[in-house]
Image (cartoon, rainbow over all chains, first blue to last red; front, side):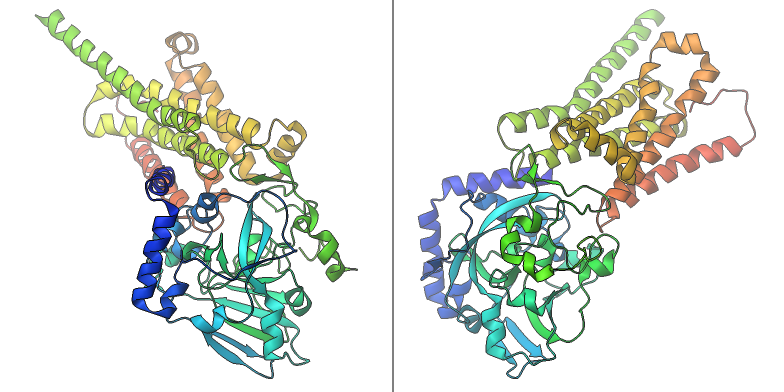
Length: 306
Length: 210
């Protein structure tokens, strides 16, 4: 019940405040607070080029993308993150890239925004819970950053870790999963051009509830692989632990590629609901990115490595 | 005087019944309103499924609270609301099931049957609904007469298992945050413990309601 009330009030808010005026106010604030404040959620991102990797499917509404989130650090309800993440402070962000690399580095918020030229990529995003959206992410290929730190020959996997601060994320203790959230990719998956580091969406700096200031988007895998609010990227030799696999290994595997032929134990993955639609549509293998990524898994039994 | 007082009391109960009936309809009417206004949020089907499911379990638990309340606080007239509350639990249960069958699965019967036997949380939910069917069908005064009070009462103890099925259905459904299903389970446990205590106590000549 609560979710709907909020959703409606948000709609009403956007109706009474013209977007341009809202953005102007943001810019004014940003100017008053100095350059780093420009990276605050909602600020417009400039110099973004359109990527040829984009799908031509219709983009989901901003209200859907930013009002329906799985971000358990801010609550397990879909409407919780948009409500509870608003006061989340990302100003002093530090990202460390370490492990099996020749040139480890740490980046602050400014450094993160300058890793690579920003591109808008419209990707399908398929959640393991059978819903999907189409998101105009802004960011760059993860491989760009990985190449900068020069992985050694021992770098077989990439491990990611989210920020977790029980003080800023009091709901996290009821998440029922171990935090901080961790995820991982095989190095060839991480180096694939589709694997993306995201700093924005819909032309704006990434909203807090979507994983500000930096998140992953791996469009051929279920959404929980696309870890939010990353503080650590570590290149490692062994397959790293991943949060949902630790919580329930039987239901969530390391690979978690979108696959209509491999059911989740508690529901079929054959179909999905493109929000906010009522009806379902067939789910595509690798979420429709089969041509680009299937070769990563040649000879692998995808039922076994789910 | 006596008749007059009695009819005022009857009137009061009648109006309270109308009020409770209207109250039970509110969640349904809100859903209808939001559906018409296209205001069900980013995932309308999930919203309808969750709301109807929540109210099924709320009303099952409320129905099971009637007997303890009327005995503990000595308000026997509460019994007059029990049938209506139980039927509303069934009403929301039916809406919940129809949402799943029609809106969620688009009447894909093979997929549905696969779901019911393959996925324990669906099995539990379906069983919980199925257990409510005979109770709804025998909710009339005629049925009580026909079956006889004792047998009717025994049959209507199925509600315990329906509520348990509902709680298990919810518990098996959630991904990790089990606070709410555990809360409903705890409430059900308290309501059942009350019945257990009554049952274990030396029998009094007064018949006890389920």
